[in-house]
Amino acid sequence: MFEITWDSFVRMITVGTLAYIGLILFLRISGKRTLTKLNAFDLVVTVALGSTLSTILLDSKLTLFEGLTAFALLLLLQYVISFGSVHFSWFNKLIKSEPKLLYLNGEFLRSAMKKERITEIEILQAIRSSGSGSTSEAKAVVLETDGSLSVISSKPEDALENVKTPK
Image 1: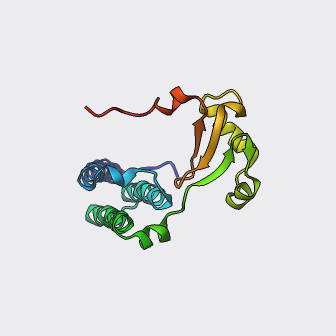
Image 2: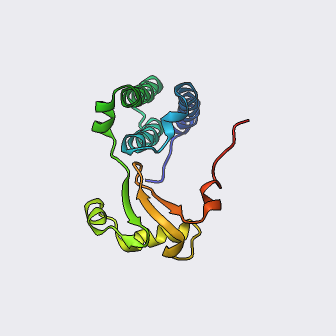
Image 3: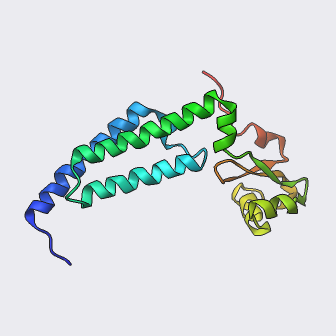
């Protein structure tokens, strides 16, 4: 159970390093969109890439080439999904959910909360996490397509806080 042979150690170091370098190269080639968390498919790809790297490191029956091929396949499928969602609105609607308003002007929208399985406590936590001290400072709370909760502040200066100006 606690035993490791010299051969398996060398294999793990060699293959692990090469697989990691390969993953970094694939991610650089595939672009920033690959590891975003815009929807559930993005999360699945990120988790699958980590799982694949782990399998490459630990499964001595798996070759480096097989592992790199698995990386390439996952990234190709991610590209196809994101390409389809950008170019075909019907496909985008099929794979992505719409943002959902859960709280507006001091009122919890209970039917939307129930449908999305979000509790009042979770909305209050999102409001606090946004830096607001109370619900009166939050104009709205939206469940985004990636599962995060966005808080829209009623303070006008907050509306421009995270906006980057073009250079």
